Image (cartoon, rainbow, N blue to C red):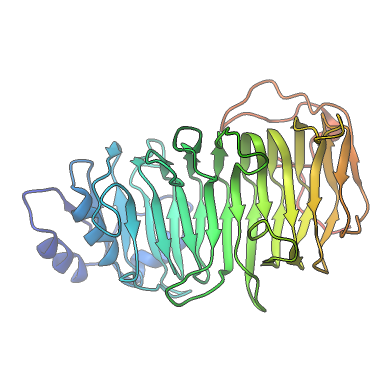
Length: 369
């Protein structure tokens, strides 16, 4: 059976009850959640839960458990590490491939809104599904994940950096508490929008992948809609700003729609083995300091090896790519306008048939050419 928690009923008692039960409710078509419920239990929480109680609930999850967030707005007030942020640190348990730990919307059609930074260190085999997270605290991201193995973030929305001035809405980095660089992760089916717009230059990104790579590290960023990053990139893959800085390895960027920004993709310094294909890059607006041209993909001081780009569609920029250090594969070009009729998280769907095989809504399977 499932359990619920509201203030007035102690969380400890609720979790003990949950530990003795097997959940019976699952989101349709969500096998990861169904596996978790077969192994563990579901606890449902509601917006009137306090920050400390929600932190305790997250830290109490064990392999196979599911925490379902009922519709509504969950506000800040969390104790670890910053009372003004939503955070989970070193007390997190790891799931397993067979029994992941899941945090999801109780009602996928009415997703909960989390106001604050969702910060996870080393979330191995965790699944975040169907959440809306908005950054509200100065300098804070909406989502930060450090390290971890086999985690998944899907069907969620991240925003708020425009108001907080953070360098990114979503940051994927290393775990300084023990798991190191992330490996086997999947960031898929999400919407990330409205990065900061500051005077820092080309530094405000929607998704910032910024860990020093190691053998075996890496993951997949696929089927996302990313828009409004006018002073930076939709996705930046790199660590720091110094020439030769060690950056991410083995990240696959595929079938994303990235639009309305300075540059759509930025690779920086010592990045290795990253692959970029079947993406739709539209309306790069940021010119160079001494050049009025724009580029969809920017290679900034790239010195790493094994990076590849193939089968990508760009539109609304002067060039497909600019910068040394990466040999382009086939089928990368600036082409006709894809014909978006609407924007937003559910928009940016191309009507031009020539763009239909690229981006989040590509109608054909991802294939290597």
